[in-house]
Every structure is written in C-alpha cells, then in structure tokens.
Amino acid sequence: MADEAFIHESSYVDDGCTIGAGTKIWHFCHVQKGATIGNNCSLGQNVNIGNNVRIGNGVRIQNNVSVYEGVEIEDNVFCGPSCVFTNVTTPRAHFPVHGIYAKTLIKEGASLGANSTVVCGHTVGRSALIAAGAVVTKDVPDYALMAGVPARQIGWVCECGKRLDDSLRCTCGRQYVLNDDKLAKKQ
Image (cartoon, rainbow, N blue to C red; front, side, top):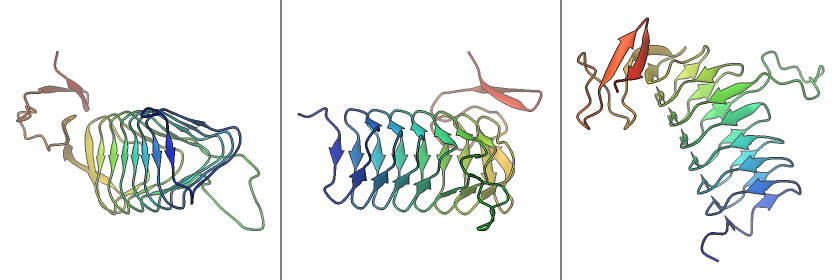
C-alpha cells in the first residue's frame, strides 16, 4: 500500500517501535526498541535510532547519523550527513551511566549541517540553521544562524532557510521582528 512505511531488507527495526505512514528507512539502518518515528520521514543509509527516541513528522536524517536515547527531534527537521548527537556529558567506559542521559531537543524546522555536532543537554530552536561542521555547546535561539567551533550566532535565518539582512525581511515575503534578542515572525 502506498502510505505504508518502507523498510529496506538490510535494516533492522526492533519490536516495540512505531514507524509512521510514508516513512522510508533505507540501507543498513537500525531502529531500536521503543523508538517512535513519525509520518513521511526519511532515514538515509546507516542511520541508528536509539532506544525510546522520538522523531516527529517529515524529518530527514541523512546518511551515517546516530540519534541516541535522550534526543528528541520535532517535525520537519533536517539532519545533514554524519551530524552527531551525544547523550552523556562526561562519558567513561568504566563508569557507565545506565540510562541516565542528558536531554537534547531539536525544535520544529531546524536544520543541522553535515558533520555538525550537538552536545547533549541543549535545545536547538525552531527553524534555526546550524552550519556544516559547527559544534553546538549551548542552547540555540529560534531562527538563529550558528557557525564555528564552538558554534556562535552569526545571523538570523527565515523559515525558508535564507539568511536575513538587517531589515529582517526575507525575499520569500516573510518578515520578522527582534525583541529582547529573540526573533519572531511578524504577524
């Protein structure tokens, strides 16, 4: 049936997972027990979704990404190739944390560039754009454009992904206002 999920024969989906209609899980993926993946998502080659991870609708996870337990991804998020999530702030092989993970939230519409890293315990705001190779070490505001190591804000972006100039008006027609260092869409 056209609206069912597609799971490539080389991938594993553990018992107790929920996979939404229209979702495609490509080669060599593993979705671990208790994970929930929304409708119309795409998991590229070699993606690992950890135990109990929640992924919203319309999410695109490119090749070679592991989404570990403790990470939540809201709707319409883009995770570029080989982007990295962590879930323990001080990992030690000989002192395992046994399920005590720092929470990370990627809000609706955010984009994480190729090879970017989100250190656990932080929130990436709505429609934020994290540049390729950036390392997020603190919370990211909605619509923020972040780059560098560690990532720092270098501007603002529209919901459509274009960088905003000083007028905060996008060529797509959306306009924004800045209040107390927070950007919001103008009504």
